[in-house]
Amino acid sequence: MQETYDVIVVGVGTMGAAACRVLAQRGCRVLGLEQFQIPHRLGSHHGGSRMIRQAYFEHPDYVRLLQAVYPLWQELEVEAAEELFARVGAIYVGRPDCELVAGSRRAAEAYGIEHEVLGSSDVAARFPALRCPTDWVGLFEPGAGYLRAEACVSALSRVALRQGAKLCGETKVVDWRATDEEVVVTTERETFRAGRLIFCGGAWSSRLLGDLGLPLRVTRQVVHWVWPQAEAPFEAERLPCWAIDPQPHGQYAGIYYGFPLSWDPPGVKLGWHAPGMEVSPDHVPREVSAEEREWLPEFSRQFMPQLGGQVLGTGTCLYTYSSDGHFIIDRHPQHPNVCFAAGFSGHGFKFSPVMGQALADLSLDGQSTLPIDFLSLRRWRRLVDEPRLSG
Image (cartoon, rainbow, N blue to C red; front, top):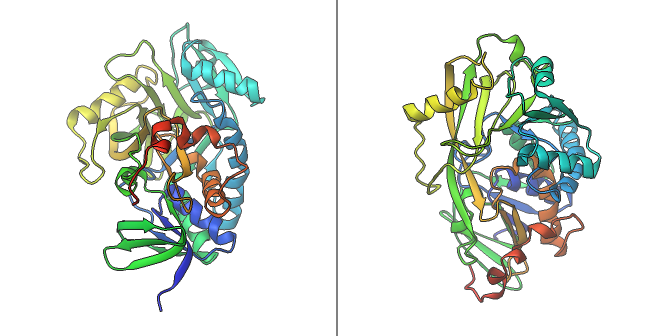
């Protein structure tokens, strides 16, 4: 007789693994289905590092979720017996009125987050690798840092398995349907049944939830690892994570960010936070062109003169943008036993343990005491009100 589960989670990447862990800890019979390996390098959760911070310029309502998630990362480190969070600090650099600096300062002041505002000369004195124009400032957040991305997803998955979750990699979902009594999920090889269903499909969310017409687009992002001319200024003891807002913007509008020198992968990691090339998640150009290989290190050297030009490697990952740049987490309007999280827009990784809790709450209880109302589907009223076909 086929086993029936309490909850099926479709997508065991960052958010799906976090949801599986929480559900298993709450005593649920949980099945996680992932179309690729667990973890894999074809979505949004690879590349060695992800920044974590609380002075959040994107929207101050995120801060309460971030205050909740810091202890959860510490808890996961204990459960997994592994260091996952490198608390090296972060500095946000730009003109005092740019959104990166001004927005981060508003959030820090509103929520009492430890921070320090530095003039341009103080930035250079404190962090010798960095240089910025004289009319710029830096906002330093000592409690920020970075998460070891693949290690985090592996730890979430490992703890979920130890708690009794069943995780199946290389198992692609091709269809699903829901009634008031159960959900039925069909993969390429077999069919599974459960009382509830959670979608954490990342870049594949539009396909999995096509009946909702979610306002999502997938973009290809390129990151670099560069070896500096001198190691010392780029080591974590002398350089935190950083983000730079070089307004007025040139050809590549957006925020430039990076991480101190690491060894896995080796080098100083550079990234660009802005929409890249729009792609289908099933057909992503993985090869990095010569122009793509050169422009980000070249641009970054105007703010980091000792960066050097030895590009050790490049990589691609995917952002899944919502139309307003904010996450979407909610229950399906037509199926109360189906919920989902999507549209993390390139800044969701750090939230994964608290998103796992929120998804478990929505799935098991129909609501959550966590402050997620501002992320609900209701901000696009037509998606809630219009009648849709089931999955």
